[in-house]
Image (tube, helix red, strand yellow):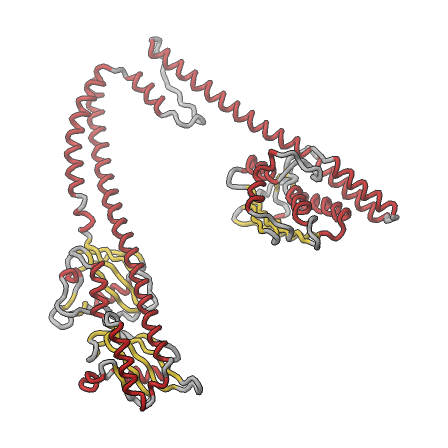
Length: 580
C-alpha cells in the first residue's frame, strides 16, 4: 500500500508540475502579447491624434490664405509668392510646396523659380477638381516634381462678394518627413508600420534606401522608391480594426489596425510573431530547473510523509483547510474506534453545530427585520387621521355632501388597504388604487397645491409587488417637495417592464434637494417618523424592504436638483404571480 501511495503521489506531482509549467508559460506569453498590443494601440491612437492635429494645422493655413483673395489679382503676384514662401519656411517640417492658383490657371508657388523650371502637371487636375468642390479636399498620394511623393490639401477660393470661384490654395505635404517622424516610435528590428488610405494607396515614403525594419513587409526594392506588393496592400485593406494575424516575407506577423482618422488614412502596426516568444525562453529554462529540483524535493517529502503520517490525519487536515463557505456542510467519513476516529466524529459534530447555529442566527435576523417593518407599516399616524377628519368636518359644514362621501370612501378604502394583513404583496393595480385614494385625501386638504398623473403600461398592472411601496415616496414628495412651493406642482408616476424587471419612476417638480440633503435620506431611518406621515415607513425603509425580499440588485435610486425636483427610480423583479 505504501509503494502504491508513493507511486501515486509522485506521478500526480509530475503531472501537476508539468501542467502548471505549461499554463504559466502560455499565460506569460499571452500577457506579454497583450501588453505589447496594448502599447501599440496607445501609440496608434496618439499617432491618429497627431494626424488629426496635422490636418487641423493645414486647414488653418489654408483658411488663412483664403481670407486674402486680393493675392489672386495680377498686381499681387509677387506679394503672394513671398507670403507662400514665408508660410512654407515657417512650417518646413510639414509642408513641401504651397501654391495659389487663379481661375485662369496662373500659378504662384512658395518656390516660384523651381516651379517655372520643372512645373507640376497635377496643379491643373487639382484646379478642375476644385471648381467642382465646395470645401477642402485631400488627394490620394502621387509623385510630384516639386515635392516627391506627396499628398495635396486643396482649398477652393471663392469671392466674398459674389461667391464665384476665383482660384484655389494648395499645400503639398512632406511625406518623407512624416514617415521619418513616425519611424522614430514604430521602427525596430521586430516591429514596423504602414499607412494606407481608404482607397488602398500607400502613404509612407522614403528619402533614400529602404530601412531595415521595413524588410518585414514585402517591398519591391528593384524600383525606386520601393513599393509594397499589391496583393499585400489588398490584404492590409481587408484587415478588420484591432488585432489580426497576417503573413509577411519573414514569417507570421501580428497586425494592429486603427480606425480611420480625419485624413481618411488607416495606421497599421506590424510585429513579428516570434517577438512574443523570445522573451519567455529564459522563463522556460527557469521553470525546467525549478521543476527538476522540485521533483526531487517532492519525491523525498512524499516518502517521508507516507511513512510517518497516517491517511486519516491528512484527510482531516485537508477538510479543515477547505472550510470556507459555512452554507455547505463539510463532513468527513470515518468509523474508526481509535483516537483518529473519535477526532473525526468530534469534527463532524462541531461542523453540524456551527452550521445549525448559523442558520438560526440568519433566520432570527430575517424575522426581526420583517417584524420591524410590519410594525412600521401598521402604525397609522394619528395626525393624519385628525387632519383628514377635520377636512371631512369642514366639508360637511359647507354642505358639500358629495365631497364628504368621496373623502370618507377614500379614507375607508385606504385604511382597509393598509390594515389588510393577509399578505405583504399586492398587484401593481391595487397599489396604484390605494395611492389614488391617498392622493385624493391630500388634495381635499391642500386643494390645487399639486396634481398627480399615472402612466402605467397595461402589462405591468398584474405584476406582484410589496404593499405600500409607492405611498411613502409620494407622501415624501408632497410634504417635502410640493407643499412648501408657492405654485402648483406635479407628480408623475410611470411604470414599465425592462428585461424581466418592473421599473417605476416617480418624478415631482418640487423644491428638490442638494447633495447634502440627498445624503441625509440614508440616515432618516434612525430618526423618529414625521407626524405628517400616513405610516412610519420612510424612504430608506422602502429601499430596505425591497432589498430584503428581492436581493441587493433591486431597490431605489434617487436623483434630485434644487428648485428642479426629484426623480425616484424603483427596480423590482417582474413577477406575474397573483398576490396571495
